[in-house]
Structures are given as C-alpha cells and as structure tokens.
Amino acid sequence: MGRGFSREEILARLRKTSEEGKPIIAAGSSAGIIAKCAELGGADLIMVYSSGKARIRGLQTTLVENSNAVTLEMFEEINNVVQDTPIIAGIDATEPPLGRDLSELVKTFADSGFSGIINFPTYGFFADETWRQNRESEGIGFSREIELIRVARNMGIFTMAYVFFPEDARAMAEAGVDCMVPHAGGTAGGLVGFDTLAAPLEDAAAAVQKIIDATKGVNPDIICLAHGGPIATPEDTGYLYDHTEAVGFVGASSIERIPVEKAVTEVVRSFKGFQLKKR
Picture 1 (cartoon, one colour):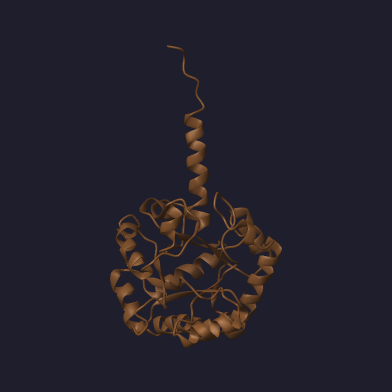
Picture 2 (cartoon, rainbow, N blue to C red):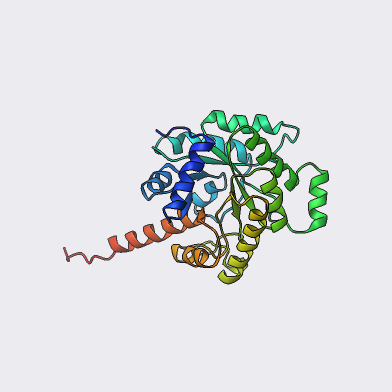
C-alpha cells in the first residue's frame, strides 16, 4: 500500500531525477495491474484519470460522466498496489455543482489520499475565442481550471497543468503551477488512436517548445513535460528531448492502452502458434 507525499517531497524527487539526466515519466494508470507495472518500470508519478476507464475498456480516450466521482473511486485500487510513488488525480474543475468551492473540491481529493492534482478533463484544447467566452459566462471556462491550480498551490498541494497554448501556459505559471504539461492533442497509435488528427512529430515538438518558452518566461523553475499527439512511443520521446526543453513525458494511452494492445495480441498469437499432434 502506498503513502502520501508532500509537494516538497515530490518536487525534490523530480528534480533529482532531472539532475541525474533521466526523463521524468508520469504514467496514466486506470487499473491496479497498470499502476503496479508502471511503478516497477520506474514511473515517477502515477496519474489517475477518469477517461482511463474508456481506455481499459478497449475504447478511444473518451470523457466519462461524473468524472470526479469516478476518479475518487479509482484511488483505492491503485493505492493498494503502489508502494512508493506519488499518485496524482485528474480533477474536473467545471463539473457540476458549479457553485462548489474549489478548495473543498481539492480537499476532497487530498483527504482521499491523492498527493497531487492536474486539470483533467480540460477545456484547454478549445481555441475558438467566442466559444471560450461563452463558456466563461456560464462559469465553466478555462479560467476555473487556472483557479483550481491556484487554490491547490495555496493549499500546499503538488500541481500539474495541461495546456495547449502559450497564453494559457503563462496564466498557469502565474497561478503557481509546479509542473507544466504541453498537450499535443489526442494520442495517435494503437488500435483506436487519434491518428487522423495528429500533427507531424516535428510540428508537435515545435508547439511544445513554444509553450515551454512561455512558461519559463514567467518562472524558469517550473518543470516542463509533454503529452499526446504524435508523441506516443519511447522513440518519439527521444525526438522530443532532442528538439525541446521538455524533461519528461506524461503517457496515458501510451502506457495503459497501446502496450496492452500489443502485448496481449502477441502473446495470444504465440499461444496459438503451436501445431497439435494428430490424435
């Protein structure tokens, strides 16, 4: 059974990893077996997202209803098999009831045992300004996600933020986020990846670096990772590290879906590969 980690402990661990020249790896883990193996493989953070339920069911990454309740329910299963790795919760800041105090929401997750938070699900991927303004007027805009990070940071809780655009990165940095995660879009690859939507790896890396530049312009001490789009395999992250200042990777489909698809398919083919003697 795992234990809780303070913000200071997590930051010290992540910085030590970077100082040793190793990438920081945050592993999406929506089932105990995934979390257990991710930790054995050396994951620095275990990420728990409600959307992982869709991946574990063999589906494309999809948002689920009652996201926060689903994520909270997942903690016990994950914590039961994780020994010494911080477990981070994806929190939907815009989920009803909208009037709910964000500090109360963060406290609910912290009291459940999570050691940190990230803004997921997120409205950050919407770029249309009119659409964004309409959501803001309804009280469910990206600004509420920024406030979520600000509140958690003021409570002394480790924070991560998914961002898609430099201006959002600057706002998250000003809110005090500890770890910025430039998001390159839905992950490509595997049986149900977002291949048709993924940008070329070169373009994704350039977009990631723009977000990192915006982040570092506010606070150079913020840890910057990357996630999604065409960055789907270990080889892809090699390109990422060569062409950006990202010091690690957050994998969801890349860790809990694509490897399972490959491994189970291949082992069943191997079992089927024998020719029985005639009886």
